[in-house]
Length: 280
Image (tube, rainbow, N blue to C red; front, top):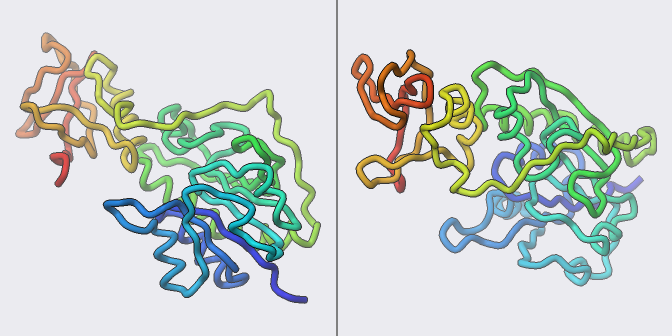
């Protein structure tokens, strides 16, 4: 039996473990990523494809013509950044699998990891679905859970979830292609949704409670990264701790606490453990 012809769609560095796992068993025929950034150059997934001598494309717009008259068995999507249209989903013989870092139907959309932390979830996981034209909507092929550590941040949780995806992708692909897995519909009534995060979403409001600010800093560590202004400079906030009651201090007032900078939130002090001037 010939090896299945698989096309992988992905962009960021954190999905590379999934690619490396696929490479060990299936070796993707083609890798599709998003266009080159004018400042950063090719995406991490494109660079990986080049390094491993795998054909790759990074089109501004996907079309059926890009795939020519070639036949493909399966498409796999992992944080590609775009929703595939019906004409693209119809190309592979066995359909398209989408890897999503949440326990669908919870947290559909582009920022599930951040929202999981913000909502104080104690568990999350990876869901692999058969993709359709709606975001993270298709039937479930596989789902695995993990526990969330109390002080988990966006970077550490992302690493855990995509490592989990890498561990289950080959067995899932094998079972799906063989027909031994029967996809099950999501409970769409229970679906929740996340939004595309912008830089402005990460501006800290010191009128908020300290525990919310602390969660926000952890959730947004990778993107969009929390920030504030200090002497007219934009400062990234990378790590904080919740301090004691703020007492008479106005929200937003800076002070020092045991030789560390702190800022008064709505109820308590926020100790700035790690900050970084923007551009550094």
